[in-house]
Amino acid sequence: MDSQKEIAFKEIDIHEAKTMIENEDVQVIDSREEDEHQSGHVPGAINIPHMETFSRISEIDTTKPILFICKSGQRSAVAAEFAFAAGLKNDLYNVSGGHDAWIDSKYEIE
Image 1 (cartoon, rainbow, N blue to C red):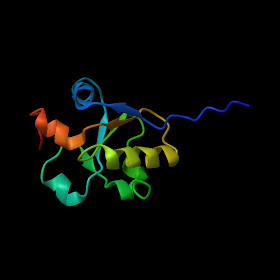
Image 2 (cartoon, rainbow, N blue to C red):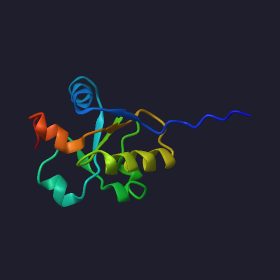
Image 3 (cartoon, helix red, strand yellow):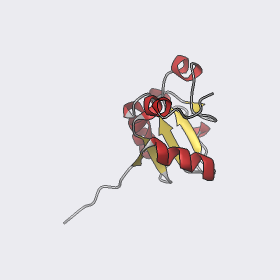
Image 4 (cartoon, rainbow, N blue to C red):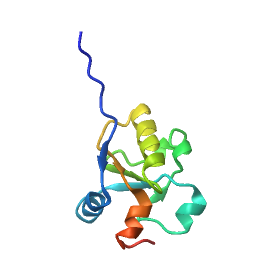
């Protein structure tokens, strides 16, 4: 019997993420620690550190595509996996390159 594993999330780059943020109603989750988030983040991102994803899952708007971002894309991938494991099966995205790539592209932060 051939079983197929469900894909938890889709990898996107920062340019795809920026286009989605500008053109769609999405929720951006900053998976970094609070002090990292406070030092600057993608506009509109809410801070839920990756290890708090399970316990704070109710704060995530499940009616929108969800973009997870961190410093480089590793913690946000873990957060996306946690969200998937917690039952969120809608459009989950991990922003590869993360906040570092966002800054390198000179995109706005708040």
